[in-house]
Image (cartoon, rainbow, N blue to C red):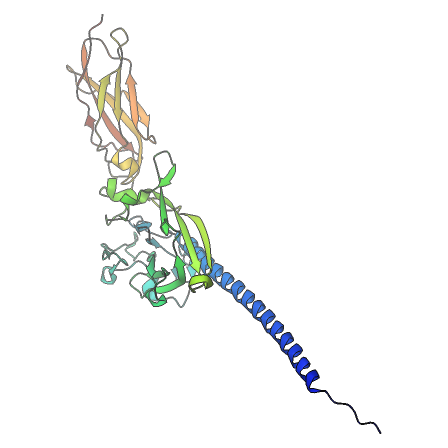
Length: 382
């Protein structure tokens, strides 16, 4: 009977070497696969984080101004890193006519406008808000709450230029919306866009930021000029990087930029259309004709209550007088809606002196107090 032959020492060594090589290749292969899976997961996590941050901003900013009273502005405060706005985003009352969403478990302190007792510092600013109680015509508290979003350095991340996106409703505790965010190099998180009188959008100069709706009553006679410039904002460009939270060669970045329209910004509900409009602009009258063809051009800018205030000016009335007479009936009417106004009077006579009076007319209709031009003299005939 032949005894079975075993492995020699050399064969055992060769087998172990081959097995070690196979195991080494397998470990290297699976390590590579594991790293690729981890990198893919990091990229997906960064992109999902980024999309969630931008989608949340987009969803809520588009509803700025929803459900506000006529006294409440849509935008309260804007800067390169922050936005504060009013809007009825959530109600805990079923069947609300103004709320965007219904949540029966929502905190009652965060489903309506903050009261004066709930005044809070606008995050990062030290500015107290609100400075008046916003109520409906029925003396009920406005259903539109105040929402703030802002970017702040993530001190817990150990530096690295990472930011948190924070959210706060009224004076409730702030919450973290997203982490591991970064701005585009050389660009702010928020680029604000405002509209000119022709409706064209252009970027708000950095020197004009931050903007704050400093007048308590939106659309009031005081809410004009520089104080109301925030009402001209119509959109914001949001530019973000999202990181996987790692550093060095292990860091993964994803970027996203989008423009969010704010359709309710600047809208004022006419409260009564019964208060006489405020004109508040100078009127000029200049001789623009010739000795043989005399003409006088009358010019003025839009009334205070056309571009701000009650925004109910529908037309302008032009009156004329000579040195010897008072103002007679209206010489002409001009429809409102222009960035500036002028009227050429071709019925003037040579060697005569005239003054012109312009008033604004609202939808009641009521006339504003007049603005009178300096006197202008038409030269004698040749």
